[in-house]
Length: 130
Image (cartoon, rainbow, N blue to C red; front, top):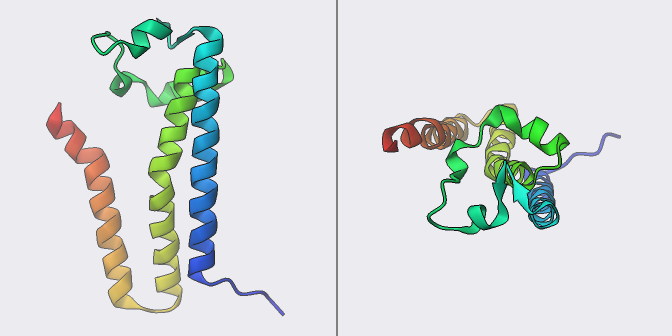
């Protein structure tokens, strides 16, 4: 007999895994910043200074994997934040799959609207603010 999981259990596991993984990356990144005394070619004091030229919005996404491999704390923190951002999006995708498989059209439409709003807020809105 195949074991069935309800959507609440799956959602709970996704949220726990996402938050714990994110926390692990962020704590590791902070530790690496202090150990190395720098991150992304900026000293620790430059990163911590409010008037510094260091700006996290200019951290390239394509640099995350090489930065992690280079043990750069800034990129570990960035990865942790991206995991934290995509955790609820994963939950919405999981719910959408559940609603499609249960043939619940009104919740499918609502899930699609939520996903649209999330991606609109992540992709379009920041470009309007620059």
